[in-house]
Image (cartoon, rainbow, N blue to C red; front, top):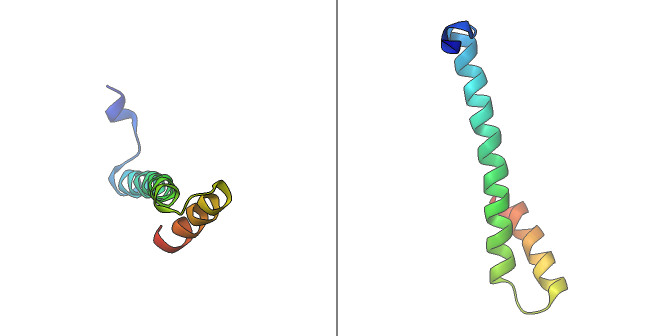
Amino acid sequence: MEEYAREPCPYRIVDDCGGAFAMGCIGGGVFQAIKGFRNAPSGFSRRLRKRKDSIRMEA
């Protein structure tokens, strides 16, 4: 029943798209951070730097 208590259609679509965009940005950032960390050369400082660079370039 709570579906009928929400806002009318145009505002709901914009709100849902905004939530999906934010979720994709956060999820993509986390995915790229893990990918950059795994593919970096050995050494913890290099891995952290590669993680940051990967997020900046890919996400």
